[in-house]
Image (cartoon, rainbow, N blue to C red):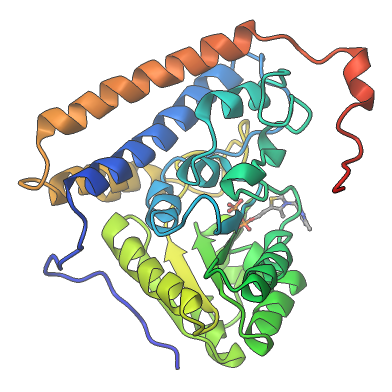
Length: 334
Ligand SMILES: Cc1ncc(C[n+]2csc(CCOP(=O)(O)OP(=O)(O)O)c2C)c(N)n1
Ligand SMILES: [Mg+2]
């Protein structure tokens, strides 16, 4: 049942028109600029808590979420969640304010980087619990199946998360219940400083799918189009009642595990990835002739302005006060 989908040597038909290509580019550029700016701002000491950056991994969130609707489809994210949020259309300014701990943030400044959520966009939340997302997605996918609205649940998790019992139980449950779920393992080579080559038993996360009777594929996570194609197949299968799938996306993070990580466990990988593999550079080359350089550059300018505004508005926004301690503690569903 398991098959390996390799990045095609010859460019294949991607089925995306100009506006869809520009949308994908805008999402990847927004994630990159958001993260690179956070890297700078975190160093000033103004941002509370831990921050885990997603730069380098943009093609994964973007290629998967391009297939999802805001209303019926949901995702569960990880501690490295900013890219997933942006790709699922969470408002960038409210995300930045959340990371700065301000009342204008998506969770009123009470969550911070690792707990950004926006249920109105189907973003169930970043998650400080490694392996916390897959069980949530079984619940969300079961709800979609019961509703019968074609909704799909997508769980993003890392190579470290792939070894958690919660993830393996979720793969099993999704298979037994034939849930409309897609499991996206973002294998960036490390869980903190632990190499995936050492920690992933059997060597392949995708190959584990066979044990649960679901399709599993490995894709080049530096190639937006490879991710987009694999995710398209998995989401279509889930929507049409074909059950769950597992996609292992192989990529690299450009920064440390968290901001402040000295990264003594790796040497030349990031320089190589930035120079030779970068998903945004590759995307620009690949779409030559389909959209213009001027269109791509205009998006760069637009995104740079958005990130500038997001930071200055977050810095100017109020912090929560003592009175805010007792709000948002309970929710009434009545
Ligand atoms: C249940 C649990 N165990 C341990 C941790 C500490 N921890 C935080 S991130 C992390 C590594 C996760 O690695 P991976 O899943 O590969 O994601 P990546 O950071 O590479 O995106 C660990 C062990 C945690 N947050 N939750
Ligand atoms: Mg990892």
